[in-house]
Length: 275
Image 1 (cartoon, rainbow, N blue to C red):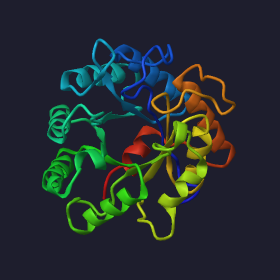
Image 2 (cartoon, rainbow, N blue to C red; image 1 turned 135 degrees about the vertical axis):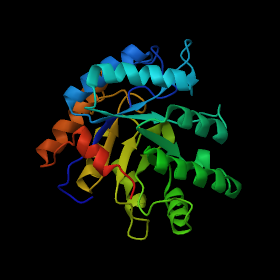
Image 3 (cartoon, rainbow, N blue to C red; image 1 turned 30 degrees about the horizontal axis):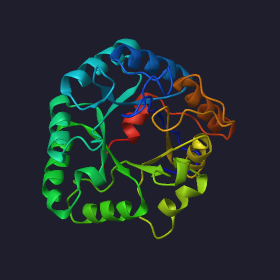
């Protein structure tokens, strides 16, 4: 993607850790996720990144819970949003369990953390089989990359045929392991350096109050955007955001003012199809 292309805004409204104690508007139930999806669609988001929880609020990977959440979201937004589930382990689930849940749900889209699903070379064959299944099942994967070394690793896997596409969407996570997890726009530079692997479809997410600045910088460089309470609870001025939709509105307004256009869901489905 180059400058001027439409930009997908994804909302990540809850993550696997934060609860109502952190913010009363964090959606935890299927109905809360559905209401949040509708609000964020109106604010400019075309995709929602979904985590589901146990009744006590703890992180969960469960096919039934995902189906319930997906059905609730679809009842509010129809096909006007891409629904991406997470396969995140959060230190609880093994790669085989992560893969099994995705296969059971067969979602429209899924995020996959490379470091979780390929913790060592011995896990490559299972990952290759899983990606081939996703290709035939028409499930759109997005690979989560926490540092530039993982981008190099993924590029090598593409070259060796472990990944059954030449181009696969990726998400650069900025500042995950920085002090206080407050990202800065220049955290993106190592991922986009001239010697770094170049992916056609890449998105950015960031931690803390500079989230909007980080993802807007990414959009100006040709990337897509992910924002929300999973990684950030603050507006750019440091005040607590009242809702996920408020965070979406900030970045939608910012990119429009800079001459960029938010994607709709159909455009997102096209751009996020591996090739």
